[in-house]
Length: 238
Image (tube, rainbow, N blue to C red; front, side):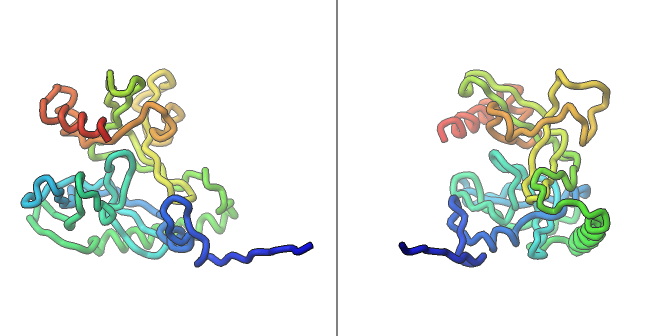
C-alpha cells in the first residue's frame, strides 16, 4: 500500500473561482475603511461612449493587508475597488477626481493613507490587547454609514416588480468581506436607525437583492425615466 501525502505552500494553492494564488488574495484583504467626506470622485469610461468620462462619488477608502490604499464604490452587485473596474460594457477606471479643485489624480490622497495606516495600527494593537479571536470571519471589525445615497434593488419575481431601498451602512468583517446593510422595517424598535442596529440585515443574504444604484439613478428609476429604465432592462438581460 502506498500512502501519498501532499504539501501545500501559499504560492501553489489557488482560488477555485479566480484561479489566483490564495496568498495573493489574502494580501489584498481589506483591513480598514475610511469614509470619504469631502466629495472626491472616481472617473470612469465605457466602450459605449469612449470619448466621455463619467464621475461617481467615492463611498470610502480601504487599506489592504499589503499596505495598498484604494477607493471603494458600489458597482453592480458589490462594493468594489475602483482600480478593478475593467468591464468593457459598464466601465473602466480612469482616475480620481476632486470636483472642487477640478483636479484629476491617480494616487490616493496622502491624508487618507496616513489616516488608514494610523487607525489600522491602533485597532490592531487594541485587538491584540483584548486577545480577540482573529480567525472569526463573522466578527464585525468596522461599520460605516453610507453617505452617498446608495440604493439596493430588490425583486422577488424576476424584475416584474422592483423595490429600491436605501443602504444604511456597510460592515467590514474580519475576513475582509464588506456587506451592505439594509433596514428591515418590521424589526425597527427605535428611530433613527443607526449603524449597528439590530433591525439591519445584509443585502447579500437576501435572495431578492440584485444591484446597487447611485442615488440619482435610483431617483430616475423611481420617476420611471425612460433612459434609466432602459439601463435596468440591459442589466436584466445580463
